[in-house]
Image 1 (tube, rainbow, N blue to C red):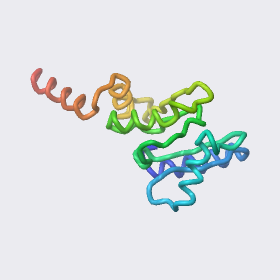
Image 2 (cartoon, helix red, strand yellow):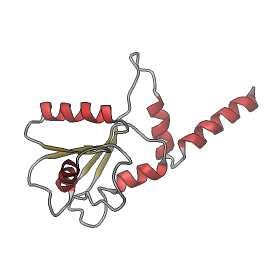
Image 3 (cartoon, rainbow, N blue to C red):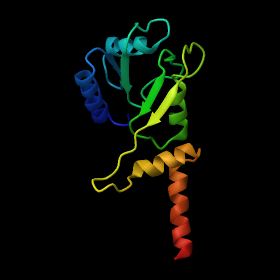
Image 4 (tube, one colour):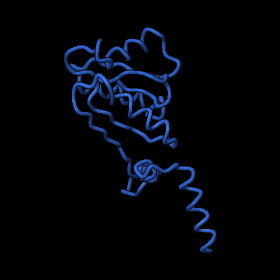
Length: 146
């Protein structure tokens, strides 16, 4: 997730819908024991048997985390930095993997089905572009055309 409120809402929904899951989180400002518990759920040497769900806020983990016990990564909201996205996605991919990894991005639509900023952020990320550069380039093209 990009926002703490989004993370908390998601964790509550998972706990309610999937009571059999062990649920943890990784976020800024949390207690050390809670953070270590969330990290342990996805580390290949300490992950429990059975379903686990760990939610996190992008950019709150340190470099070098090994979360390769995970096999699915769901991006609830995109961030503008390709570097942060690459680091986030690489947490579940690498040495220690036991299963193939699947990545999913959730893209919101407005109340009448209209596109939101998440569509543009996702398109830029998939193209390997910096979102700020992409936006600036669009403004320059619009000004030149005008």
